[in-house]
Length: 111
Length: 114
Image (tube, rainbow over all chains, first blue to last red; front, side, top):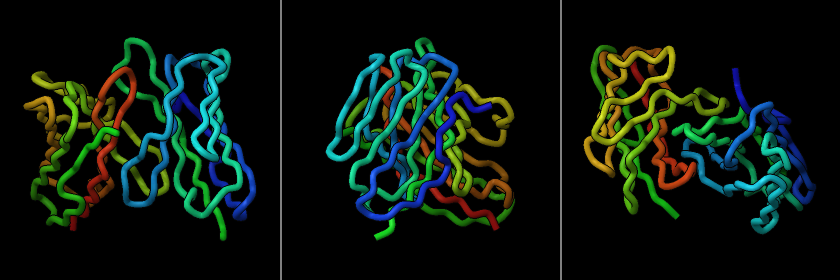
């Protein structure tokens, strides 16, 4: 059973469009990370959010942690082909060493 | 940012042989490292937690005698796939925990067992 469900699972959009990826759970997390992974490589950490309601921006990417710390979203503005990849959310729990990874969202941005 | 390396990046071996994969944190010390397995187009599956100076903690369904983990120093963990079989072919990724709940990942190792 996956603690974190991501939606959509697959997303294919045209360059310049906006998109939002959701990461949902019934569990509360002490932190939430977003990673992007390209084929044949390891995931790269994009952001960490720790406070309910927190919003962080990274250029065209906006990350939000839900008020109850059970969900998160990633919004990309004016997507570019370089944004193509597998986006993974991961939650941390107090007292747990490991992260709980989401099911993943595979994004393809078509030039 | 924190850098984690993995070696080798690709390995092809014959069935029945053992393969060792190294994971190193290059610019920070990591008392905890993790080993994941990733199937094509899927998310990461945690195999085990590697703790410096103590035994690894394996996830349910992962054979500890098959996947030997050693974390001998604060910057190195190794995963040895013993008596590898074709079904062990996969993408193996390690990560190192730097602080709080942040993990930094290695580039992965593609294992192909013939």
